[in-house]
Image (cartoon, rainbow, N blue to C red):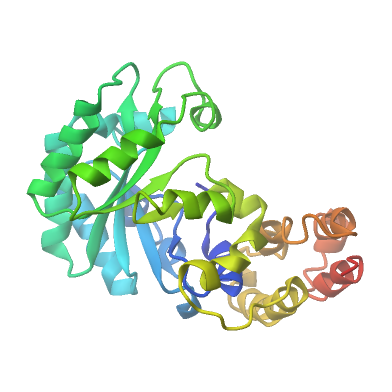
Length: 315
């Protein structure tokens, strides 16, 4: 979810669901150790609960970054062992780490020793042509042995050569049954499933077998599907914001962000781009997207553009 689930996206999603856990885009250890920490880690208090996802393979660097995440107020630190991109492979982390379970265990242990919040791992069910259940079972088992208890499992293999990151989300077949078996073999662990799950009905079906479900691009492209999550999965029947109320609630947020970061390069489009799918399925949704994508209108950096877009939708 690089360049997708930034803090503006997460604030927007939090307006739709109060309880769904939110995860940052993957932040590399190099970016935090050598870059602008605040730019990568700043977030709004309203985003809680929110987890910081790290990418890296050096135990001490990961421990340093985990400490930063805890200091910044994140609720969980997540280690990415599932991203298959070549950019990530060159840094020797992401999905290729699944072939080095002992190193992953060292990394997780170093982070656990550095922070008091939970450390979780996101990974695939296999890598390249390794399809045996024993591979992912043993990978998890080594992490369980050092005290890791939260796993987010993308139910596909990662193909490190020959497939793009996008193809890696679609081409390798899904094997939900493998993740279900992991839950049976590690009943004391919290296991979340990821991959190809898009609707509340599909979430409910998976929750018969595992503890949680991670949704990525489906939640991004169809964010209002999350509006039913609080009542259905968290037993919170508090009234849900309508799409119009969500748009209106974003305006003061955008005003604040532009006043704080406008001189640092933040522009209206950097926030509204995350909102384009909000009206999907409603009359006027296409016009809503067009207005919020109009470069000429966006150049004025005026949050009132959201009200103009809202007027195009027929509820």
